Figure 1 (cartoon, rainbow, N blue to C red):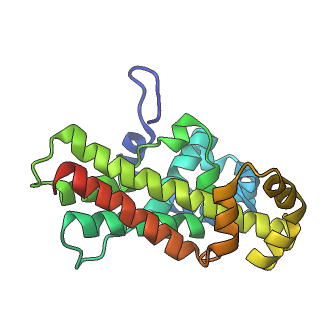
Figure 2: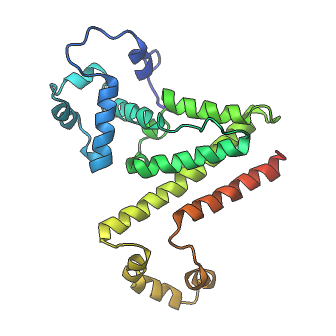
Figure 3: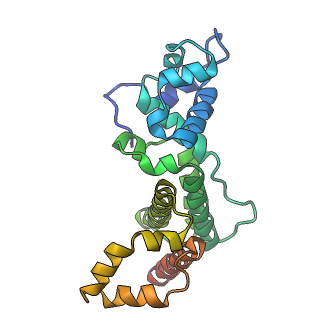
Amino acid sequence: MTTQKKGAESLWERLARPAPTPRTALSPQRLAVAAVALADAEGLEAVTMRRLASGLGVAPMAAYRYVSGKEDLLQLMIDQVYGELEFPENVTGWREAMRALALGTRALMLRHPWLGRLSSPQSVLALTPNRMAVAERALTALDGLGLDADTAMSVFRTVGAYAYGTAHAEVAWLQLLEGEGWGGGDDARLGMAPQMIWLMGTGRYPHFQRYLTEAGRKDDPQWQFDNGLEAVLDGIAARLGI
């Protein structure tokens, strides 16, 4: 969660006040949309107030009417993209809702790879309206199962952590392929062959050796994600009897 000094006003409280008569066409949403597009195309490092101002055709200081710096801007960006994570209207039952949460999180991170690059506690744990709406929808799906508040939150966080961590690793793999100019898994295995051959040659990793020689889903991230997700959901159901 974002820390702030005692008595300080949060970004969202400030933005909820009626806006003054604008001197430009700039708005928090325009800032967020432009910043997200820039981060999607060039990475978080490219997102600066000067680049945004130039792209939006406003003075460099105009953005500071809405945000006090990069952390505030990151919160706007996070809120903007989490507005894309919607639960289908026909989802019923806790398991279907948790699956929708996980699949939505994976899709979100694949569309916006910079989400996995957030590093400060303020951005990683940012509390934004759209992020809170996702949590509220998930917790609503867990209501009525006889779970206490701590357990319900634990279920939500466990599914979210699985989805985030697995998708983060998938994004890193895709970035490695792109960075090395590899066309897919076969190219990657060929490129990493010298290290892998030496490691397997030590004889210390027989079970990994079996995976290398027998696995047929090495290049199927959707199957890997779905299979792991079902194991997580099965474990939750068995442990909690739901």
